[in-house]
Structure formats: structure tokens, C-alpha cells
Image 1 (cartoon, rainbow, N blue to C red):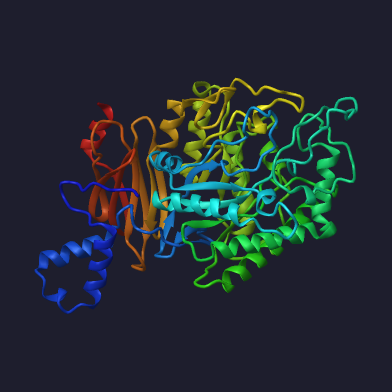
Image 2 (cartoon, rainbow, N blue to C red):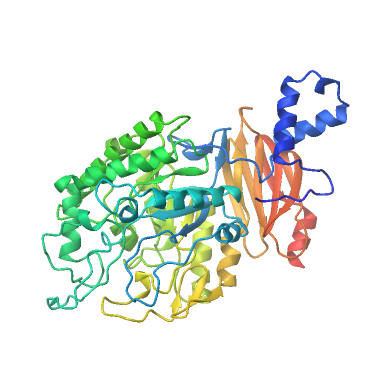
Amino acid sequence: MTVVRPTPEATIPTTRDRRDSCGLLSRSPEVRRLAPVCIASALAACLIPSAAQALPRLHAVRGDSPANVTSDGRQVLLRGVNVNQLGDYWQQSPALPPTVPLTSDDFAGIHALGMDVVRLLVHWSALEPERGRFDEAYVDRIRQAVTWAREQGIYVVLDMHQDAWGKYIASPKTEQCAPGFSHQQGWDGAPQWATLTDGLPTCRFQIREIAPAVGQAWQSFYLDRDGIQSELVRTWARLAREFASDPAVAGYDLLNEPNPGYGPGAEDATTLGLYYRRAIDAIRAAESSARRGFHHIVFFEPGAIWSAAGVDATPPPPLVDDPNTVFSPHLYAGSITAVPGVSVENGFTLADDAARQYGTTVWSGEWGWFGDPKSDEPQIARYAKQEDAHLWGGAWWDWKQACGDPHNFSDGDATQPGSVSPSLNRFACPQQQLLGIPQTTRRILARPYVRFAPGRITALDSDPATETATVAGSAPERRGSCAVELWVPDTGAGAPRYAGTNVKDIRTGSTAGGFVVRGCASGDWSLRPAVANAERALR
């Protein structure tokens, strides 16, 4: 549980103190006879919650000012990292596990970077290893991860992950590949019983998705052959029912990087949209049937080609017209996107254009760079600048990638991984020796940003070099909470000082890895570094 140490100017109560004081102030006649200073202190505590307070429920707003919004009326920026440590991956080498164990320390480390969300990978093959059997033990592991996240003030997006359909399209050593094709390892996603390939070749042409067996598996899914799509829809309903009343779960990512089948591009996008509609309907019914259940955000993706090309056909808007949805492409332009001339900036423009047809905000479920950290730094900084300018969130790929992860093998016949696992926490391979987070990357990812703000955020300018930020917003009507919360990393130069316009009771509390600046904002408001803070950044 995060503990915020009080600043000299004020004492921030514990969660229990704050809840009791707010409740007593509204109901108890005894409290009305307290000294005025006690009442003022309690009121301030109501306005400025500690980091340990329960996470507010989230929902998406579509329309002219799309955003992810809390139940108390504040916009939230969800910025974090993918966590794949509950994944059910193909194991390429018997000596190298494909995942690193997940512990509470992982979430503490994520919190210390100022991040407020994880995209938690879950796999259909682990949820329903046998047709009709929902694995409760696996769900318990997911529930434990959500609990660890909640204790650190971190939201969770549950992501139904897949790559090249699943573990069970791995090239047998005896398979003869056609000229230009090569063996490939298995990946992750669907269970074996839902892998319908009709015996087509598993060999790939350059990339994992271009393999006859992979295309046939996806075509079978889109056609709902043997009811396999219906089974995934039912699995989503079961999973959604488990977390229907949990505000720490921000929402659900319906399917990671869906591949094309054998239909034309527009047909594949439509069949993908039809699956999305079925899954959303099932999730909503499950949430409504649960005690204290509520509708969570649904994150929906374009096809996998978007990651490689920066654009792809997208599902028709009428098929994803649920009001509580967010468009979630993976913004790899400038990184792994293979189309020349598609820059970081182009990638954001293309995502913005696509989101406008749905009237949603954008949340990039994956982004990142995987080469030499120092050489990648300028591109990562360009991405960060665009992310701030668009007022979007996203999740870096990924937190800890094991040496035995399929991504670390160059082809299906490899027995040894590459020398370095290029996750955020880098590892030397094959010994799985932790090298840590590259400092250049850490500085950019942990840069200041506003986590919660009343009304709408209108501008965010964050400078990783000085670890300072200027943020502005508009809350024209006093509805819900006025609390604004700005994360600032610890540079070792002491607590930051911020000034504001139309922001009262500005206070700074320390937390693991940095500081949280809080205040009560109304009207057209702004927060900016005080003069002393600028001097602090230059020390």
C-alpha cells in the first residue's frame, strides 16, 4: 500500500481517517460543534485524497471531448506497461521458461515509475484449456495480480492476448517448407481444441502471421467453425462476471492484434467487428447480472497489420457503438512499423483519424523501442511529446520478458535466444540476469504527467530533461471531485514546488519513486513549476 508522507504545510490523513471525517461531517451533529480548524482540516482531506484511497470507477466518454473519466467526474490518463508474466506461451527451449514469475514487487516497481495502469496479458488457452472447463486456479492468479495492482494505486486492463493464433501452430521438425518459407516456433493465444487449421502448412513467409495454418485458424474463428468463436465469447462473459464489481479493473481488451483470415480486407474487418459486438454484448450481460456489477471500458483494436504498417482496415462503427469503448491501436510507427516514411507523428495522426469515426479517445495498448536504448532515445522522446500533445495514454511493451519467451528466438529451429531480452527491465540471456531499466528510457517513461483532473485536460507539456510539467484544464461546472493529481519523479533534488491558477490547497506528498502534487481545481485552471522548482531542476 502506498504511503504518502505529509508535507510541512499540511498533514494528509489516512484512508480511514478521511472516510470517517467526510462521513461525520455530512451526518454527525457532534462534529458540527468541533473547532473550526478541525472542520477545515477534514474538508481539505475530502478534497485531496491520498494515494492509498480506493481507485475510482472508470468509464469512457465518446463525442466531441472523448476521454477516460472517473466516476467522480475527472479525466484520467492511463500510462503504464504491459505485464506478460501470467502468459501461457510456447516454450522453445526446455531449459528456458517462457515467463518470469509475477510478484507484488513487480507492481511496486511499476508504481515507483509513476505508472497508473498495467495491461495484464491473459490467455484463452489458460482460461479454457479444455472445452467448457473454465480454469478457476488461473482466474485466482489473475485476481491476485489485480489485488497487487490495486494496493499500489494501479488500474488493470485485462488483455485477451494472442500472437499468430496460439501455441499449437509450431512447425514440426519433419515439416518440409516451401521455397521462401521457414519453420516457426509456437506462440500464444488459443487452446489446442480451438486451433482448426485443416492440416495446412505451418511454415511462415518472413513473419509469423504469414503462414497458411495461421490464416486458416483465423478464418475458422471468423466463421465460428465448431462454435469456437462462441466459446471465446462465453469465456469473456465468465471473466467479466468475475471482475464485474471491481473498480481496479479499468476494462477489457477484447483481442490482441487480430490477424486476417482469408477474406478481403474489408470483409476481415467486418467479421472482426461482428466478434467485437458479440463479445461486448456478452460482457455487458455478465456485468449486469453480477451483484454490484457495472460496465467497464472495452478497448478494441484494429487488425495486426496496423502494428506493421501504421494503418489497417478498421471494424465498421455500427458494430462497436457501445458508448463505453476506446479505440486501441498499437502505435509502433517509427519503431517496428515496416512502411517507409511512416513516422512517429504520422502514427499519431493516423490513429486520431481512425478514432474520430468512432468518436472515442485513443489508448495505445502497446508501444516501445527494442534496439540500443541510447540510439532509440530521440524516437522515444518524440513519441512522448506526441502522447502529451494528444493527451493520450498507453502501455509500453513490456515489463519483464523472459529469455525463453518466443519473441527472443529468431526462427522455429533456434535453441538459444538472443543475447538480451529487450523488455523495459532488460535481461542478459540465456542466464536471465537482470540488467535493469535503461536510464534514458526510464527518464522519459517516468516523466511528470497529470493522472487525474476535473473536467477535461486541455494541455500537457512535460519535459523529461528537467522533470517538470505544465498542465492546464477546464472544469466549468462544479460537479464531482475537484481534485487534480500530478505525478513528478524524484530527481534527488528535493520536493518539487508548483503554483497554480484556479487551483487551491496545492500540496506535495512523497511516494515511492517521486512525488504527487495535489490541489482543488475549478474553472479554467493550470499548474506550473514555481520558480524554486525550476532552480531545483538545474541543480
